[in-house]
Amino acid sequence: MNISRLIAALLGVVLFLPALSNAFEDDESCLMCHKYPKMGRVTEDGTQKSYYVMPDTFSRTVHRNVPCRDCHSNIKELPHKPVKEGVTCDSECHSIENPSTGKPFSHAPIYNAFKESVHGREKQEKGLEADKPYCITCHTNPLYNEAEKAPPKEIIDRCVVCHEDEAFSAKWYNHTSRRIREIKRSSKEIVALCSSCHADQNLIERHQAAAAKEGRELGRKFPYAAVAYQDSFHGKVTKYGNTDAANCLDCHASAENYYLSVHELRPSRDPKSPINKANRVDTCRQCHKTADENYAAIDPHPTHFKEDNLFNYYAEIIYAIVGNVALVGLVGMALFETWGRKRDGVNWVLRVGTSWRRRRKTRTR
Ligand code: HEC
Ligand code: HEC
Ligand code: HEC
Ligand code: HEC
Ligand code: HEC
Ligand code: HEC
Ligand code: HEC
Image (cartoon, rainbow, N blue to C red; front, side, top):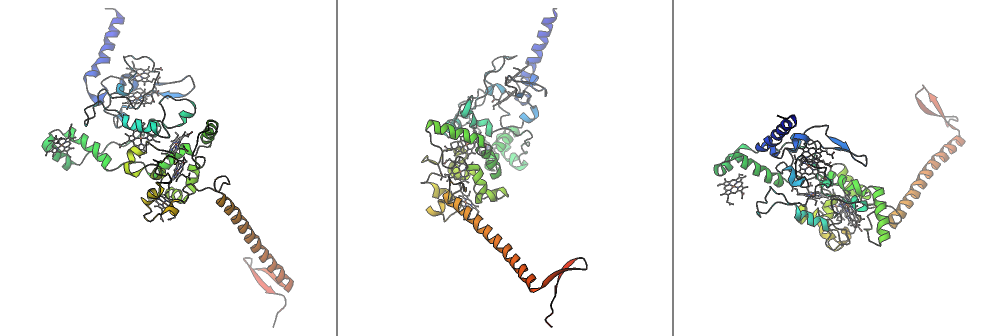
C-alpha cells in the first residue's frame, strides 16, 4: 500500500470519526484543527489574529448549540479554503429552527431594526461607516463567562413528570429563566460602552467634518454627549454606583420595548426618538413622576462651552470672578488687620518651641 494513500485513509478516519459523536456539537470537526492555542497568523495589515477556539468556553456561550458552519457559512468543504468574508448576523441557521414559527432561525428582526437606526451599517464597511458599532462590537462572549447554573431540582422534577427528559427540561428552564431574571448590562457598563465611541474626540471630529461637508445634520449635543453626561447629576451618581439614575439607554431607548429598542436608536430630531421634544416629558416621567415641560427642558448633557450654553459659559466666568474677588478680599483683610496690629505694637512670639503666642508690648494695666 502506498504511503500517501495510508495517510489519506488515516486522515479520513480522523476527519469523519468525530462526525459520528455528538460531543458539544463539533460534529463538523472544526476543532480538530482549531483547538490548538497557538493557531493564528499576522494579517497583511499587521494585526495579529487568533484562530483558537476554546472548546470549554465556546460550550458555555449562547451559541453553543449552533454548528460552526451555520455562522461560518462560507466554509463549504474540509480542509477549507482561506476565508474572505466574515460572519454576518442576519444569516439563517441551517440547523436551528425557530420553534415558534417552524422556520430556520435568524436574527433578522433585530438586524432589520438595527439597519434603520443611527448605527445601521453592513458587516464589511470602510471609512466613516466602520466607526459605527456592528453586532459583535457590543456582543462578545466574555472569555471567562460563568457556567449556567444547574436548575433547581424541584422544578426539573416537576417538568419531567410530563416531559420525561431531564436534559430537555433543564435546557428550556435555563433558556427562559435567564431572560425572566432580566440579566442585562449595568448602568456603568452601558455608559462605558457608549462612551467608548461617543467620548472619542477623533471619532467625533471626523464625523462633524463629514456631516458639515455633506450638509447633514447632527444633534446639537453630538460633540459633547458622553463627556457632558459625566458632569450631569445622572452621570455623577451613576459613577458612584447608583443604579436608579438614568443611563444612556434609559433616555435614548424606549422602556416599552427595551430589547428591540436598544437596536433602533434614533437621533433626537427624529419624532420617534424618546428624547424628541414631543416625547421628552414622558421619558423623564418614567422616573420623575411629577416632571413637566420645564423639568424635561433641563439639559441632560450640560456643558459650559460658549458655543453650546451661553448661560453656563458666563455663569462660570462670573463665579470665577466672584470667587477670586472674595479670596483676594479675605487675604487682603487679614493683611490689613496684621498691619494694623503691628502698628498698635502687637507682636507674635514663639514660646516653648511649639506655638505662637501673642504678647503685648505696652501693657494697659
Ligand atoms: C484541517 C484543519 C482545519 C479544519 C478541520 C478546519 N480549519 Fe479553519 N483554519 C485552518 C487553518 C490552517 C486556518 C488558517 C488559514 C489562514 O491562515 O488563512 C483556518 C482559519 C479559519 C478561519 C479564519 C479565516 C480568516 O482568514 O479569518 C475560520 C473562520 C475557520 N478556520 C473556521 C473553520 C470552521 C468553521 C471549521 C469547521 C467547519 C474549520 N475552520 C475547520 C484549518 C482548519
Ligand atoms: C453564532 C455564530 C458563530 C458560531 C456558532 C461560531 N462562530 Fe466563529 N466567529 C463568529 C464571528 C462573528 C467571528 C468574528 C469574526 C468575523 O466577524 O467574521 C468568529 C470568528 C472565528 C474565528 C477567527 C476568525 C477571524 O477572522 O478572526 C475562528 C477561527 C472561528 N470563528 C471558528 C469557529 C469554530 C471552529 C466554531 C465552532 C466551534 C465557530 N467559529 C462557531 C461567529 C460564530
Ligand atoms: C450599540 C450596542 C449594540 C449593538 C450594535 C447591538 N446590540 Fe444587541 N443588545 C444591546 C443591548 C444593550 C442589549 C440589552 C441586553 C443587555 O444589556 O446586554 C442587547 C440585546 C440583544 C439581544 C437579546 C438578548 C437576550 O438574551 O435577550 C439580542 C438577541 C441581540 N441584542 C442581538 C443583536 C444583533 C443581532 C445585533 C446586530 C444586528 C445587535 N444585537 C447589535 C446592544 C447592542
Ligand atoms: C402537566 C404537564 C407538563 C408540565 C408539568 C410541563 N410541561 Fe411543558 N409541555 C407540556 C405539553 C403537553 C406541551 C405541548 C402542548 C402545548 O404546547 O401546550 C408542552 C410544551 C412545552 C414546550 C414547547 C416544546 C415545543 O417544542 O413546542 C417547552 C419548551 C416546555 N413544555 C417546557 C417545560 C418546562 C421547562 C417545564 C418545567 C418548568 C414544563 N414544560 C412543565 C406539558 C407539561
Ligand atoms: C463603535 C462606536 C459606537 C458605539 C459603541 C456607540 N455609538 Fe452612537 N454613533 C456612532 C457613530 C459613528 C455615529 C454616527 C455619526 C454620524 O452620523 O456621522 C453614532 C450616532 C449616534 C447617535 C445619533 C447622533 C446624531 O446626532 O445623529 C446617537 C443618539 C447615538 N449614536 C447614541 C449612542 C448610544 C446611546 C450608544 C450606547 C448604547 C452608542 N451610541 C454607542 C458610534 C458609536
Ligand atoms: C436624562 C436623559 C439622557 C441621558 C441619561 C443621556 N442622554 Fe443623550 N440626549 C438626551 C437629550 C434630551 C438629547 C437632545 C439634547 C438637545 O439636542 O437639546 C440628547 C442628545 C444626545 C446626542 C446627540 C444626538 C441627538 O440625538 O441629538 C448623543 C450622541 C447622545 N445624547 C448620547 C448619549 C450618551 C452616549 C449617553 C450616556 C453616556 C447619553 N446620551 C445619556 C437625553 C439623555
Ligand atoms: C431611569 C430613571 C430616570 C430617568 C429616565 C430620568 N431620570 Fe433624572 N434622575 C433619576 C434619579 C434616580 C435621580 C436622583 C434622584 C435623587 O436622588 O434626588 C435623578 C436626578 C435628576 C436631576 C437632579 C435633581 C433632582 O431633581 O433630583 C435632574 C435635574 C434630572 N434627574 C433630570 C432628568 C431629566 C430632564 C430627565 C428626562 C430627559 C430625566 N432626569 C430622566 C432617574 C431618572
